[in-house]
Length: 322
Length: 122
Image 1 (cartoon, each protein chain N blue to C red):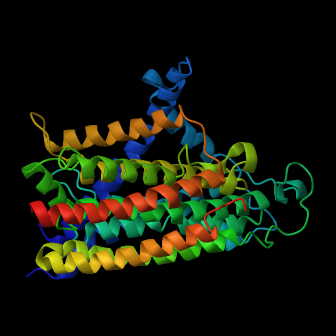
Image 2 (cartoon, rainbow over the protein chains, first blue to last red; image 1 turned 90 degrees about the vertical axis):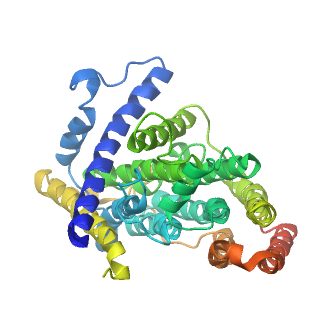
Image 3 (spheres, chains in turn blue, orange; image 1 turned 30 degrees about the horizontal axis):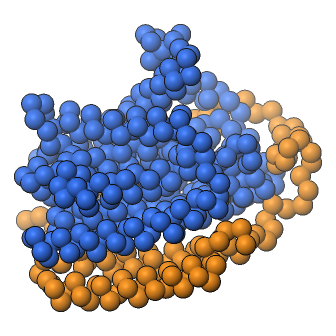
């Protein structure tokens, strides 16, 4: 197979799988949330309501697309596609199994973090372009939060890189398959780093308890206030994509990725990813949201020092133990 | 035989397909959706009243401080990554060097903390 066909095949395949997964995840989240609140959730469309996301998309496609008069039309229309592209592009380097990986970059971890961090830009473009006070306030808060939690995220992702000595995502998983999952050994580094990564990931994808940018009780809907129909749906989709792919990255970096007994690698990777994803939504429907000042204090006073200590600790571990 | 850039090919494909999809969806919605513009619909939402003034006003300087802090610590991370990969070869010398570097930044963080830049409400 030539490089080009490989690239096109895997690129197309990954996008298809991820988009299908997001649709199913939407259904799954609604079902789970409903069960937690003693409801049934979607039941009417298709078996067990499984076709609900399809119905949602068809409905949203028929909705009017409103651009406010005062808005900056170009920026306003640019933001939702950019958000979706940025969220999808991260999936290109996620290893789904030993052989299924779009692009096995030598600097894979760097790519994940760099492209993941680009999600800040569409948020600000949307907030500024809407020319709406709620949207701009939401964008400012979202950016302050995202750039702050970027630091612990980067530091937490550095721990597996130090312990395995490579930035290649597949090599990190390979190392864990041969030795131990990083969360199991050295657990005193792996567990805190994993928790730090998950916390920062929740904040990066604006999930409860860190969903201040769109705190609907204060800001209407934050940056999405002025968006209607499919453009709103694209933002919504990007959020799910971000959470799903970040779960996959956490599974690969800390939970051994495709490594596991009895079943093929792909099954393990899918199980770990969806497990983490379900956990994120469990948290979402259980906890309340932080205040803005508490959020920033938590990041800079606790998570950043912890991250620096973890990085130095991991380095010390490697120097002593090997 | 393999050019080092070919490993980026799937990424280009993913970007391309994602771009096509992300542009096609709103375009399709624009074609299929109704278009009934009224003056009220064009107004920015501000709790039901007519919007007062522009949304683009001055905002709190706190956000600026956060951005500055972010730049400092993100650049730290940029230096940490190459170090992390070459770390085994560098050994104790590399560790000591990075310890000094990290200590400088931690001193900076403590200074910022004591100065009250991390107190969101003050």
